[in-house]
Image (spheres, rainbow, N blue to C red):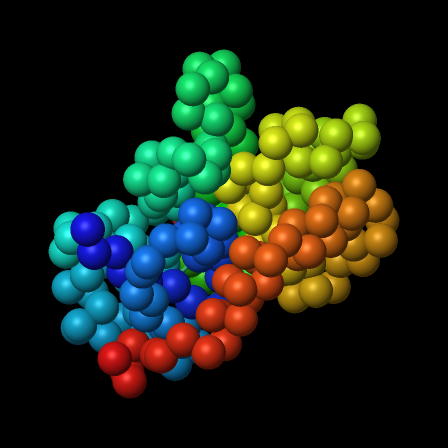
Length: 215
Ligand SMILES: N[C@@H](CCC(=O)N[C@@H](CS)C(=O)NCC(=O)O)C(=O)O
């Protein structure tokens, strides 16, 4: 089986990268530089017509969207326990969080970062940004509460791909001038996630992997 992950540094593709590293998978990676528009090049649009990362190619078949990519990685490497595949309710809870991250939390950030994607009315952009930032703060508060019961990971005692997905949002706090020390449980969770060797290898790959242009 051949695996290629298309990803971008600092983006929501981090949990996919961490998942492959946690699993000890043999994979190729291609790094996009979003600020340089790599995602809008004809070559990449042929891989993902909406021009987004992550994309996982499995034997040449491409899959986009975190909810799908993370699910596929977890199923390809069941021994790595990346999602609680054998526990129906726990798996439901994992997808509840992954779904909320992709369709709620990420969208609040998008509203704050890219209000022009939501309306062409420039007069509404400041309000959209402010509303997005507020929703991000609410989400941080919810995550902080969830992590306040002394269990180390978002699903409880076992690490899962939900954890590096949450790390993505913790990393983005700086871009909204959010003081993460106001969310001590979430920050401790981020530190735990960052301390995992697989996360460190994934972060390393975010800077060292060949870029799409060089590939
Ligand atoms: N719903 C998608 C969102 C993917 C997404 O928006 N990825 C961002 C990086 S965090 C991206 O590719 N941005 C490129 C762009 O907006 O041009 C998912 O969960 O995978």
